[in-house]
Length: 449
Ligand code: IFM
Image 1: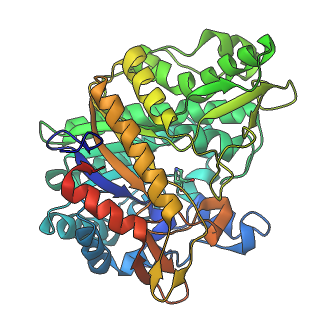
Image 2: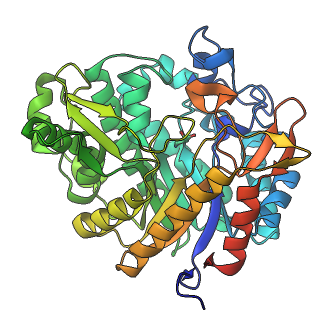
């Protein structure tokens, strides 16, 4: 073996990820009800180019084709999300059998192909009916989530070993309820903090429901978007802003999940806007996890700026650094830094990189898609993941974001993250150069050379 080879531990899980609203389309089929993302994307001015997820990658109709692609890529696992409005079109009440059947078929097709299903129960598509009752600002929504989790576990339980409750509660809470860039488009700090707390409470309800329903040995976790935080300059004020940003982005979720507390420094800063925590909430939120999923894309570099963000920290892209089509800095070492930090400070029993990837504007030429930047991004991040394993981090798997080019939320179809190209006019799929390279990684169980 050449010195630079990074061969991962036996049994390491190689996967790719998507989310329901980003790929499924078929928003009015199979009894699906509307979600907040249907409402939001159909509101003029909210999404670049007026795009919506109405058709997306047409994944709802293309399960056999897409699972065959996963086979070509040599994936051992597929992380997808279950659309709550397919299961409960009205948010609650009687589950929709056709919706559950769709996911049963997906799980069966994956398993028949030797690919482990890794469902996520909430990747931002709240049933509109629940939003009409207050959405995540309403504590009851966490209860509804528990019922939904129990229903999906009953339907899929035997065939699924790894469950993620919520994807990126920070994004759902703060982009959805503070900046308003995501559905439901609210702009209010108190609402955002209530939403964040209720998303964690939903995680607790969902975890309890899954554990009650699933066979022993099933694993339940949550996926957080985390990043190392650096001050932009040498000034003390920037260092303090970086501490606050770390509390806001990372510790606001890690502390309650692993320690049953919210960061004191921010609680006092938020004052009357602080979340409505009832007796017993934090104990339930801190119930042990079987794994933590980390979604990592770029580090957070911040400058002190009292007018920016609820913590007075302005996010910057360090000048002269490479960036992706999202404008996000390419900083692979950040993956090592966040994995080792979380291992050191919180010691989850197992970790997965549940998302990592990059948008670049690539186009097919003569039927091929040459995306060396994405290949380099994945390569460099995988080497950092490997470094973290060598440093003792119990990292068990890696999921590239994304299997397919898809609906990138407020950016619509104008940002491509896929290792498989999608022509949205014809729905033709083409494995990109990065996808072919990743197939080599899954085959070799690591990165050679
Ligand atoms: O596309 C998103 C995904 O839905 C959640 N994590 C970040 C990705 C890229 O923005």
